[in-house]
Image (cartoon, rainbow, N blue to C red):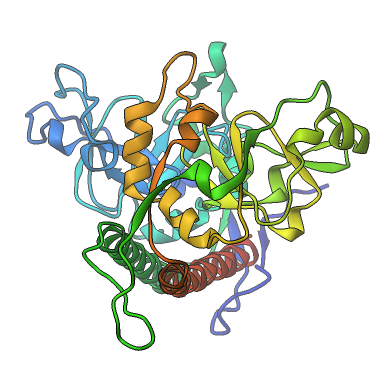
Length: 413
C-alpha cells in the first residue's frame, strides 16, 4: 500500500482548507552547533528540560546548579530553539522535545539543540505538537535505540529523520496562538489557586496561634483554648498491614500511592478479597469519616478523610487510621494535622532507618490547641469555605487542561 502523503485533521480553523503534508522534521529544524566556548553564559544560566514545566533555568527549577567544572563546551540555546532530551521518562521512554520559550542559556552536550527554520515553521507549533506524549513517543520510537541500562542511543542528526504531518506556516501560527491563549488561562487559574492556598495557610497560622479569634453569636469571647493530645480526641488510632496476597478485583486496599492531589482516590487502589478484609485484616477495616495519615516514607504527613464512595476499604501499615469521637469537629482536627505545627512535630519526632516514620504513640501524643466546640465549628466553616473555592479552582484547571488535550489530539494529524 502506498504511503499516505497528506491528510486533514479532525478539527481545524475554518479558513484553512488544504491538506497537511507529511514532511521530514529536517525541513523545519536544523541542528544548532554553537558552543559556549567564549563563556558568554555562566553556570547560573544552565537550563534543564522538564516534562511538566518545559525548558527552565536549572537553579530556579532544582534549587542548585548541576553543571560540571567547566561549561565552555555546553550547547548554546537561543529563545525559540528546540531541545531534545536523551533521557527516558515514565510517560516518555524515548525522551522529550521542548521549546525554549524563555531566556537564552546553555545545556550540557547530553541534550540536542535545534534551530527553527522560520520560513517553513512557527516555533510554538512544534511545542504544542510534541506536548502530546503520544505524538512524541510515536515520532521517536522508530528512531531511538535502547542501550545498556536503558540509555537512549540516537545521533543528533537522526532525530530529524522522522516525519510528521504539518500545515502551512499561517495555519501553524493560528494553532499556536490559540493554544497560547489557552495556556495563559490555565496559568491564571493556577496562580489563583496558589494565592488561595497561601491565603488559607496564613489564616491557619493566625488561628492556630490564636492571633485571630472568633466571637460567639452575641459578640462575646469564646472560652480560652485548652491543649489536648490527639489520643484524647479519638476512639482509635491504629494502622493496617500488608496482606499475603492481592486480588484482581474486590475490596479497595489503600496505599499511599492512592493519594492524588492531597485526596484519596480509588484509581490506583489495589484489591483484596472479602475473606482477607473481614477476617485477616478486620482490625484495620475503614469506616466513613476515618482520617488516614501517612506515617512512613517520603510522603509522611499526607492526610485525608475516608469517604463513602471508596468503601468498603482497608489499608496498610504506612497509614495511621484515626477515628475521632463524635463530640469532636473532625475538620478542625484535620486542619491541625495539616498545619505547620504538625510538620514541625514530624521533623522533631521522626525516626530514620530504611525510611522515616512516626509510630502510633507519637501520633497520639501530638498536642492540639483545643477551643470550644462552637468555636471549632466556626473555624471549620471558614476553612471549608476556602477549601471549596480551592477545589472549584482545581476543577476548572483540570477541565481546561482536558479541553486542551482533547483539542490537541484532534487538531494534530
